Length: 613
Image (cartoon, rainbow, N blue to C red; front, side, top):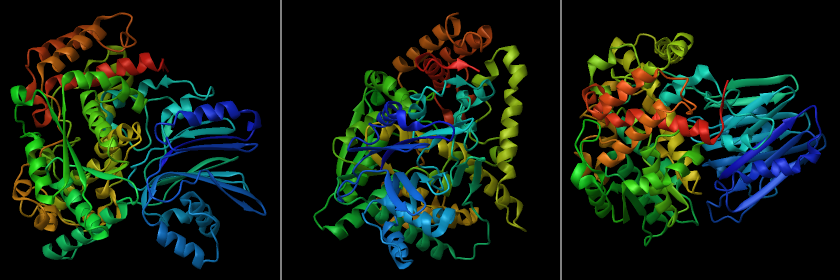
């Protein structure tokens, strides 16, 4: 667990670049407060910060394995959940790892199986492996993209890091906004795998392996969903889902460090927590799980039910905690609390954020970190099992656009005429939609309803899930908290992907998951309507957003001054303040939330001194 940085340069000797490599590595201290190690050779440097997430003694990374042809150096962020099986296979093949470090196992696996070693890993991880024999670098990311890994190339070299700040600490990289990526800044759910708004900065896409040699980079996909007929009965399908999820939660439960779980009182988080309670008690009958929920101080006065958030989480979470016997903690956050930590959430991302949505999660994780080092969450279940309202709206599903965006106004509609002509945001959105549909794994002979639902699921497993995982990962790791996502286990995703929609939805929203887990859940959880991650409904917060957006829109010194049509943007802000557009927003979302990306983009450009490319 932790963070890593690296620098490859075939044309220059990195031996004198120690201060820069250490500066890059130190930007990862929040991700890995427990250990630090840096390894520098003539053409490659690797730095790692570690977070202790098990009872095993700390072993510094990068791990080095000496061979007659040269040194192999490896580093890992995140966790592998099949290290015992991996070690057994490595030893059976004749290798003898010297330590218990996971990174050393990766080096031996690479020596044995080459790039194919990546297919043997079960986990949420990003890794780097330098092969001194061939002077080749391998970067890879887990199948679902739970753990981040950024990189940039330049003639003869490459920089990489777990977060952009690791690359920004190197003078070879200059922060510039790619104007063509403005639609992503204003609506991050549109991002295709690997994209960022920084010019020249990329992410290794989920399920990809990037090999960099003197000939340049080669990128390959090592895993993807495969469509095939599903023949199991409903009861057998539910039983297998239960088996897979129970095994995954058991694998992801850490040993030797305090463990907790997010608990909203919904089906997803309660299912994970219930399985965690069972697994903990099997290890130690007296063990108790700590669970955590967030609510807002203003809920009694200002909460209004919407389609996406029909009720407040806290009462359901408390009922679920009592049913399972967990030690439950409810964090009550005020608007002042949210505003106080938003600057920290921006630093956690290095990219435009989500305002209050980041802030409430940051506050919750900060509270959890006081008790836990590792935690579990129920995120991704909606994308895997189909939990959002749009899954049940034929009029939305049959439109040829992203179903979660709605028909209301978008910030990209208010760009200046010159930028609109150059970028054409509406055409950009259509092109992104078409590009994702091009990669949907099809099933020959599938009926039109299931074929379309397969498209809808694939779209949801792309941009929206990446946004959810990014928020969870950045907010938690900024506090040194390792939050794990059992619903992203690739075996579970592979199986549920091929379950027909009629089976997934049998019995209502997430009927399959409820059938799999119902015996462990309280009735209030099973019968509760889907409720998304909470947001504060408070006029004080909304008015603050509106005031700041108005200032940004009309300040000629703002870095956004040349990007937007001022008159039209002011009219949008006026409509939001007058509450004239609520019905056009997806799921009844709060209309002031439209302005979050505008405000966050302004602060990102100003605070990171991002030039306009």
